[in-house]
Each structure stands twice: as structure tokens, then as C-alpha cells.
Image (tube, helix red, strand yellow):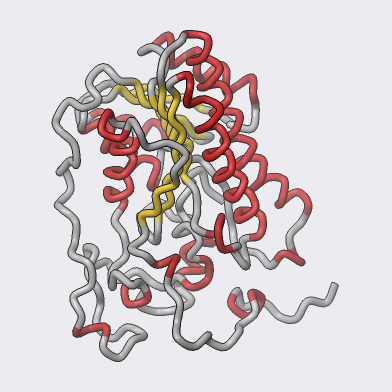
Length: 327
């Protein structure tokens, strides 16, 4: 389970495979016999590059949940490079302290907040603290989420509630507080909700998360219409498989079940966390003011991949190495 809303490769589920450590390039010997001879999508610019002009976010306050680790931290970093003042929130104070020091080296100011986003009162306190420190956040990135692979029949009611409450209810409570404050102040704002591709397709092995992320996608589309007249944009952002050092043990174990994940992507490479950050900084920028109610998928077209012939069915229990269900 994780604070980072995209630690699972956003819908890759048990199809993910072991990371080879290549900087976004395909590895030879993948599942396709000719994959090693094909170029795949080019690698992105190096770390430190930005997709927008320097200073795009000068004077802007950006609040990122799950911002202490993984993809949330990567998104926060790209806003920091462009001049934003950051407020990063997470459930674990030690992770926040380390992330604060790292992000502060990129420029602007960084504040931290320990927060369980399921608690509406605590959510309000985080906004109070952010507003007192830097001003009302102009951008909210809802990245915090929870997840772990489990067959639906083995999932306890508590496990269901935990994932849905963090991923869906927590996202709503953060967004609601953001919206209420901007509506009262008469100011514009931008919300980015980190989603998952199985919001469209379903997610075998991740029934709790897939249901919650489908709800998040619906929130994006609903609130974009409700709040557009008040100048508030609401968009979604879906990462593909973007390995990083903060992945949890259960997710890494799931990815290790097959080899060469580069060759299993149409791009013939996995994504890099900074690529998600660049997409986020675009969606909240002045250059995307007419983009709202949209969910941008950054996964090299992997979620749209279909074979000419369907592969044999392998049950979720088999993929997770579990024996027959006995009740």
C-alpha cells in the first residue's frame, strides 16, 4: 500500500515485469522476436529540462498529496523547477522531511504537512497551514492513493474500504476543500487528479483500486463542468509504467513475475517519472486554460494495446501465485 497514486504502473497489474535499469530504452530479448531491432519511442530530454518557460510558476502555490515519494515527488520537482512554492503532504513525516530537503535544492520554498486525506478536518487544517505559509494553493495535485494486488474473493471488507477511502474519498475531500476556498475567494484554480487506465478497462487483481479510480475519473468530468464557470479547471493524469525507487515490496514482487517490461510496451521502453511531471506542469499552466474535464494518459499507448489473437486466459490467482480458493 502506498501514498503514491501511481506506484502500480497505473493499470499494468500483473502484466508488469522486472526493470532492467535502462534510462527509458528497450532491452533486447523481449517477448517479441523482433522487438530488439525496432527503435521504439525516443527517450525524453535529460533530468533538469523543463517543458515550459522558466518562471512559469513564479508566485504560484502547488499542493501535492503523496508528494513525499515516487511519482508524487517527481511531479512536485517539475513544478519547483518552474518557480512554484510547494506544499507536499503525506502520511509519513520521515518521508516528507527527506523530500523537502531534496526539493528545496531545486529553487522555491517547500512546506510539508502530515495528512490522512480521509479525515476532512485534517484536510482543512492542511489548507489552513498552506494558506498561512504561502497563500491559498493555486494548484492541487491529488496523487495520494493506496493499492495492492489481491484476488477479489480474498479481499477483506477492511481492505476494500481502506483503498476506496484513500483513493476516492480522500481525493474528493481534498478537491472539495480546494474548490470551496476558491469559490469563496472568487479566484481561479487548477486540480489534477492522478488516475489509472483501468478506470476505463477494469483492473483484474485490483478491483478495489480500479473501482476507486473509475470514481476519480468521473469526479474529473463532473467537477470540470460544475466549477468551470468559476474559473476552476479539473483534469486527470494517468501514468503508465514508470519504475522508481519508492515502489513498495508487494508491487515490486508483482513486477518481478515476468522479465523485460520494456519490450512489453508499444513504446519499447517504460516511462520515466519526470515525463509525468512535465505533463502535470502543462495541464496546470496558462497554456492549457481551455483544457478541462480531460484525462491525459502518459503511457506510450500501452493501455490501448491489443493483440491480433487473444492470449490464453491466466486467472488472477495463478498470476499472483495463489492456490485454488477454498473459502
